[in-house]
Image 1 (tube, rainbow, N blue to C red):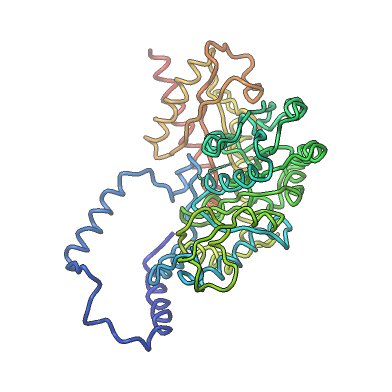
Image 2: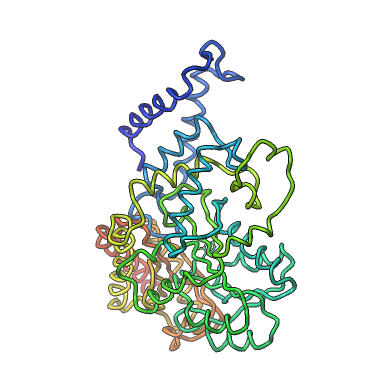
Length: 459
Ligand SMILES: *Cc1c(COP(=O)(O)O)cnc(C)c1O
């Protein structure tokens, strides 16, 4: 986290940045307009601090709910430092240095998947990155269908709606992965242009069988788009299971990849990335915007982006993070991902031996989903919501997720299915510190469950 010593580092770096502009006439006498008194500034900041207290404690290891990971201090500091200039990477004139940094940082992301040549850029997040990849897919295969599994991120359907692209879902298997037989049937209809493959689904952390999908798609000249917004960085982990490893190793064969540095890449929000294997897709973007580009010589990232204004600070933050934590197998960054994998497996094992809980499946990445044992789906759902609340009272923050009755709920086959879905508990163990806190997490979870059980017995 950001701490007080870090603010001294920031002050020193700011001095260094200002040296580069020292020859300009001083603006000391004309403070930034409209001017605001220090008291008013302080008042506003304290008011923000108070408002922010109404939050779950996201940076704390006892927050183990939704997909939230604190940015690294170096990312926060580089972002804040860059705000002195507030560059805009829409064009070279708006963000010369940060555009160069963006190219380097994006090349590092592409290298995760073995791509030496690529086309890509940063953007607001995974949704926008997917929109862009599916827009290019539409331009290359106009009128043809986009397929994604029923576990794929919900925004794919929405994005296809925006693009006016026909969209169909494919069933998933008992591990929440895209089902190959179901895919084969869809492909056989002959109208498919693109298959979306998730390397790490958002709900269950499932890794689709990319290698098999690629083989089937290639036979029919269908594009393969990888949604690795959440899972992409795990390609660096040493401890992936065999199937997940195979899928990640096949990523280099995909046509496009989305990866979110603001998920597992230690960045503040507002940092997604889209990558294309074939730089020639750049022709799809060709546009004329004379007032933006008239004085820029080189091809720059603004020319291959759907968004116009983009924060140069996001590029600087990612670039700085990669400098201290490079993407190398066996490095500190890779080790931190392995630590998350390991913690998720340990939580899964701990849940398996607790009769009150039923994990849906062994985790492939760092998401664990489990049901509360009960006679019916309604009762299990009600109990999960109660455990969620009691855990929060113990300062342990989990998440709830509703899973439709499907092969993914096979572990609950003996339950009475009085409705078509069941609410489960879910934990994203995205912080390396979760490893050291797992015992504390389990102690609180057990206490919460005991409270719920006692209340049930009294009732
Ligand atoms: C988070 C996520 C998205 C959406 O990305 P945002 O950055 O939230 O817009 C898309 N796909 C997957 C697999 C995700 O996990």
